[in-house]
Image (cartoon, rainbow, N blue to C red; front, side, top):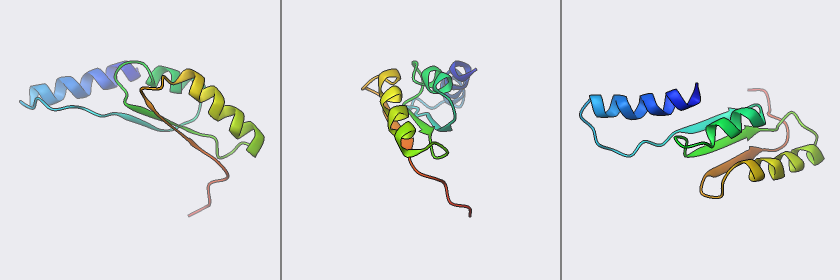
Length: 85
């Protein structure tokens, strides 16, 4: 599904007559499968939300995310707990 989102964004811009770079970011991804899918061609960066994890697991999650996400892509991992608004 993510591949089609990226492809759709590019096609829509072309349909509107724009020949511009498209940047897509996966924000607050909740699984490594989702991050892996988004780090394929089409998405510029991914964010894995590990805020619900204990600190040590969060650090391991970042290392796993770094292994999954190519260095050419941006990777962000949320540490700690999200505060209620």
